[in-house]
Image 1 (cartoon, rainbow, N blue to C red):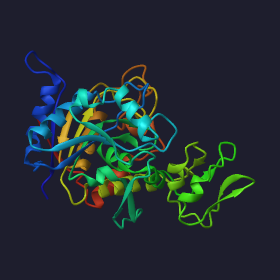
Image 2 (cartoon, one colour):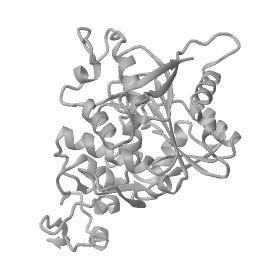
Image 3 (spheres, helix red, strand yellow):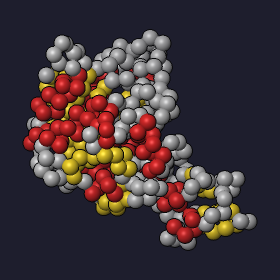
Length: 365
């Protein structure tokens, strides 16, 4: 079987060629022009960064990708789904405010920003995949409405996945709030009586009559609850929380299966920047010192291969002194940084279900 091609360019910039020009050269060399973009809706899936975090990708990179897609006739937009946790990206209004604050707006990127799962994180498309862990993925509707998906990934450490790259950006990032709960949890949500304002919206949204008022506070009957998570999306007071109990294998495999739901049956292309490799996700409202030096930019049609190539290249780098990663780390920086994680399980499962290949050919420009 032929190895997947992953294209790479370093971050050296000489007079006459800047990094943005190198990025355009990279994605064209990797074959983005072979996709038929003509009048096709094209979603660039990206993480806009939680305000306060400065490690997220600069919007300049997104503009390069958007401009290339537009030059090829595509109708392009930037997108992400709302978060499950309480922050400034948990509903579409705050999410767009956060995106604009971090520089992601039509004036800087040349295209619109759309929050894929809608105002409250409940606009989802159910994608049947009949996976080992997920039977029906809950994906943000705007992402599933697109004809083509491009993942623009900031490769960095992650406290639950080991690292975040293409698979995490596509899988976890494209899930609606209910989809995120499914990936994060093997259990069912519960209500905080202290936070409950007795508005009754969760009762109205529940299709299984699992929620009722007890002493004027909502309460979930777990014998009736199916764990769909729609009540979480509906609650405006963050009173309903998932049970975050989940095995590492279950989490990784669910994330891979959600990524499969996003890329199956349509063209996809993947770009990863191994820069500002912070130890934690860009969902944090802060970013720690990078744990390794900047590496470069990668592009591929294969999301598994690009993640594998980024991980291999990252693990060859020395540890930055004074960072959260201790200087005696040898080999697998991400497992050393987050010992309870197992990022290999995710990529192995992704390869098993046919998203891509762990074997790759690195082509350096």
